[in-house]
Length: 574
Image 1: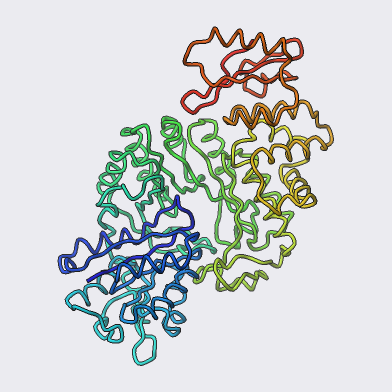
Image 2 (image 1 turned 60 degrees about the vertical axis):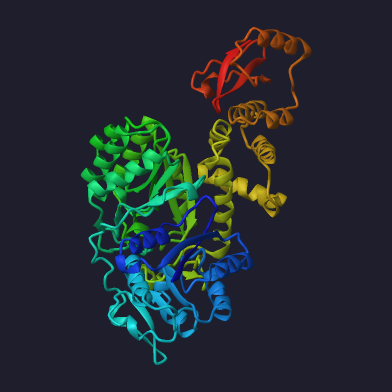
């Protein structure tokens, strides 16, 4: 029997955990040995024709689709076409987007079965009921009776309602390792892993709100992590909703990884920063720089909003712990905000933005509320005047506190935060420009208005164009020293490794005398100092380089750029 599990990822760099976990679970059941189970992954950038052709070539008898807000529209289209091409194939939908829309999928003849509970056990039992057959009669689903966590049609009526959520948390979570065949298929992609399911918190916008929490045994977690380390996987992203729900458990896993660090693998965790304590922060200070990265969902700092979304946050503890992590300087910090939450208008959101920006995260993710089906907020959203799109991703259009025009402006700001803050390519010029405005939000608000007036949002901009636009806008700000801003941008360009871009950006190259002196100096450098370039600076940059050695010299200082193992650094001064 040919069984195909299909995933459509949002980006090429992503991978799909669910189908690999289901395949591994099926693989440990002896009665499924006759089933040949494969995983086929695409991205949303693949055409329907390409995906349809690849699926059809596999000649599957059972097709499982893993459905989320970013791919369910494509899944529906594929299923409708496959129904015509392969009428005898059994089509199974699973994942959060399927579970929340089971009746429509079944009555619309898009799916034969919808898995509404945990995928591993339910799908394996579905396959097990048909594994002994040489072929499938998709219309005969009588043998599915008793399987928990599924829905299907019988006599034109949706049945299985009483079992839809059965077995969601009955397993002990001792599931097999999801990647028994190794990692060759995941080259240059993120590998996902879960050490726990569910969440002890009840955030109103989240599908995991209040879902019973179950965790893998630590012994199993250590064994699994050892496989990642041995294979030197570049990045492993934990999908646990709140990784540090148990302080001791989280600390033990971090200590395990630090003790066995291979110098390569990065581990990403979603944590609640306010749950950290001084002992955990002290432990984390010993991690290799780049070994860990933390995603911290602040979402809002407005107390009234936090109360409405059932997310009580000890903000003082959160701020203190994030600052301590940042001071340690060895963990990449990614902080999240959500626009469109209850009772948070533009003024309140601006304060949340400024509060989080002041924490100086490596990345600030400005997201927008998505009204997920069966999340707690989906049952009382009208109380807050929330209006969202009818189709996935069900993103907010406006609320009782935030108009559509304001959301559009916030989306413009979000794009600039990605380009100018999250890229890390404006690390010296951006703080100076922001300091010229009353608050960080006011800077980005004014900058977004500039982009809009000039039509810059209408077409993608190159990094060099982004530098030029930044200089143009910043030089117009009250109190700006244009020459100083230009020099900061020069340093940003050089230290980000874009030497050719820097030379194209400059209009004040070295004089002939300076160039001759520079060339003479270069000849004396050791052979390992390569890819050297020089640029004239008009100001003393020492303060902006943390005392890094660039000094004023007759009105013109010269820095050298060296790409040493992919790392930019200031070498010396002439």
